Structure formats: structure tokens, C-alpha cells
Image 1 (cartoon, rainbow, N blue to C red):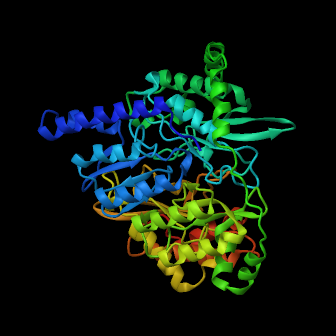
Image 2: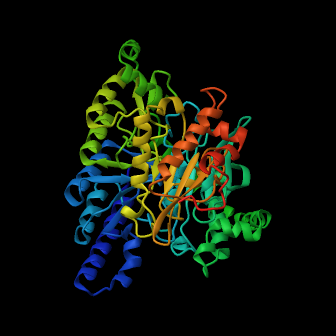
Image 3: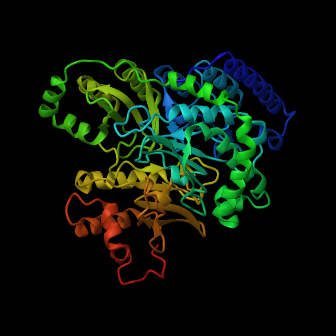
Length: 556
């Protein structure tokens, strides 16, 4: 993975010193909170319901064991002993004291980490497939391209005060695991004959106006990536509306101007920019590819793995559910679930972080990934080590076999922490997970993604959940709308709103009726929820949610 050079280290040291001075001035009263706000946001520091919240960038979701251990130490020393992994592959600390934040940033810099551009109207943390560099179906590791974009966009003078925040995701496989079509720019590596390039989509996004990204370029040469992305961002930076933040994202710009006009403007700007890129970007990219080269694979027998798989049912279940095919047949990708039923989705204690860091160092070539689904991935585990990994995770409460199942719920922090939220997300996720654990139906139900957001900003990605739940405030009462049929993959779809919402006391039973309807309708246990929904449509699910056909009336 990429390691900071002298320039990076010096830049970060200077930036942290600058922010330390700004914090001191805020504490002394020399700066008001209003004056301090843009300064703290430039360094990932928010003011939430109960305290400041520090959002730390994890570029393209990649960590090593030393970085994970540092995050554990920060949680212990300056927070309440845990961190929250987000759908943007970041980690958030919810309880730092303002006077401690400069020390936290210094501790992060010691392991090549920071919180720059995790907030504000800038290009945010570039995300990527959490199986990058390991997936059996990968065309090419997308992380060198993501790192190239990170370095280009960090503190870019032209893109520090844009109309709104801007998000880019990169995936290197035909199967889109990075939700690229729900980003301002989505980059999906594709292979056509011997040629490999990027399908570039723009204008995707969730929030109050969800849209699926549109294809701007079907196959962009890889060598044109940086000038083409710069052309897109600079066109939007001029066109994007600054008079109304609800209409400022590029999805609205594309909608208002039309895709063809945006294509014309981007092509024109690209023709101006391309000659200015004289090969330095490709020199850097080649160096980055060396930084992300595959580790030296272990050559060892796998007989003990097969013996343990046949002997221990719990281990077999975990392997079946939580591991995925690796590019090396003797290896597996292991997903560590942070979704034990009843726990807060995405939270990990400092002790759990240390366990995972130790396992990564011993058994995963010192690599970790954070997934947008709020889980942690050990990307390179030799099959002969899987049993040791399982036994290391189990006593720490990290061996739940539910990756991709109904209790593997994505949920934003909701009104328990977030100042923007209008309803709670975490308790609803916990109740749903516990309900289906009690029913003992999770494995029979099979792949089913529930995503929950506590407000219209949709940080929980509810629009693209197979079952989405949106929490809203209705005259002082939390109300939960259900959407059905959303999809976050290469066949991305915005879910269809089912009808009136439910209050907190009835939403879990409503979800249960949706799931039981699916079980009744599916043609076999191989037909997934999404396949059944696409075959039969929404009517039978609506009938189950609103018996008597009272879709027009409140269900709460």
C-alpha cells in the first residue's frame, strides 16, 4: 500500500500545526464558533448533538495493522473506547474533546492518516471496492487510480470551495461492489477485447433527490483519467448552483442541462486540459502500482482447512457466508461482521480493533479493508489459516456469520448522534436483527440488504437497499417509510416507496410482513428477495404492508 513520502509528511505536519493554533484561538475565545466552523470542517471536525465528532479518512478503505492499532489507541485515550465505521469507508469518533483533537491528528499522522476533506464542499474520501487487490473477478486493482485521484484532489486550489461536496468511487471488477452509480463520478473498470478502460458515470447520488448515475463515457482510456475527471469537476464547479444547496449537486446540474450538453462541455474542457498533462501523472501512477503490488503468496497445503470445515458446523457456516473467492485459489477473502444482532452496526471497540489488527498482521499479509457496508475485510487469508482467524474472531464477538444477510444492516448514526437526523436508526436496526435472530430464519431468507437512514440525507443508503427504511419526523413523532427493490450493484436501482410510513413500534413488524411475503412468493430457496421483487413487482408486498388497501392512509 502507499506510504507517505517526505512531502506528504511535511504537508501534514504543517497542516496540523495550523489547526492546533486555530483550536487554541477557539478555546481562548479569539474565534467564535461561527468563525471556527469552516476551519474545523476543513479538518473533519463536526459539532454533533452531544459533542464534537472527528471523521478520519480511510482512503479507498485500505488500512494496515499499525493504522488499525492507532485507531484503537485513539478510541481508548481520547474517546469512549470505540469507533464507528461509515458507509464512506471512514471512521468517526463521536466524543473527542476539542482540546484533544490536535493531539489526535498528530497521532494519526504518525501512521500516515488524517481527516482532511472528510467534510466541506470539497472532493471527499475516494472510495473503492473493499475486495480490491484480492477479488477473483477483478480486472485490475482500482486502488492505484484511487490514490492518484486522492493525491490530485487533496488541497487542490481550484476545488476547495465548490457548490457542494463531491464524491468519487472506483471499482475494478464487472461486479460493482463500490456503489459507483450512486456517486457524483463513478469509475468502473471494463475490458473490451484487449482494451481496458473506465466506464465513467456522473450524476449519481442519494439524498432527497436520488438518482442513478448516467454514462458519460463508455470506455475512457486509463491514461486520460486525471484530465477527464478534472474536466468534469471544473465544468460542474462553474455550472453548479450556489444559490440553493438542495440543487447544487452535479446530479441536478446534469438533470437541468441534459447529458448531451454536459458531454459537450466536458469534451471541450478536456481538450484544453489534456495537453497540459505531459506524463507526470502516468509516472506517478506507475509508481503507485508498485506500491499496491500483490503480496508474496504463501504456498502451503490446505488439507487442515477442509478437515475443520467438515468437522465444525459453526466454522463451516462462517466460511460459507463470510468468505469470498480470492484471485489465488488457495486463499479466501474474509469478511469480519460488525453486525452481531443487538449491537450498533459499524461500531467496533478498541479491543476488537486490536484483535482484527493482530489477525491481519499474522494472517492477511498485514492488510485490511473497510467496506461501505460497515464491515471489516481481511483480504488475503490463506485457507490453512482460516480456522485460526475464526477462532481469533469468535471470543471477541466478531465471528457472526451474517455477511449479506438480513441482520447485516447498514444504518447511519441517526438521531442518537447526528445533528441532521430526524429519527433514530440504530435502535430500529438492532430490533430488526434481534427479531430475525429469534425467528431463526436468517439463513433460509438468504441474501437480503436492509439499509436505514435517519433523515433525508440518506447516509444509510436506504434508496438502494433491497428493503430501505427512511426515518422522518412527522409532527414530533418518528415515522419510518419503506422502499422496496433498491439495488446498489452494477444493476443499480432506486427503491420504490411502498406507501405511508410506520411508527417506531410497528416498523419491525412491517418489515417482517415484507419478508414473509417474499418467502411465500419465491419460486425456490435459490430465488433471492430482489429476484422475487423484480418478478412479481410491488403489489403483493404492499398488500401485506397495508391490509385492506389503505395505502392512502397513514399506517402509523
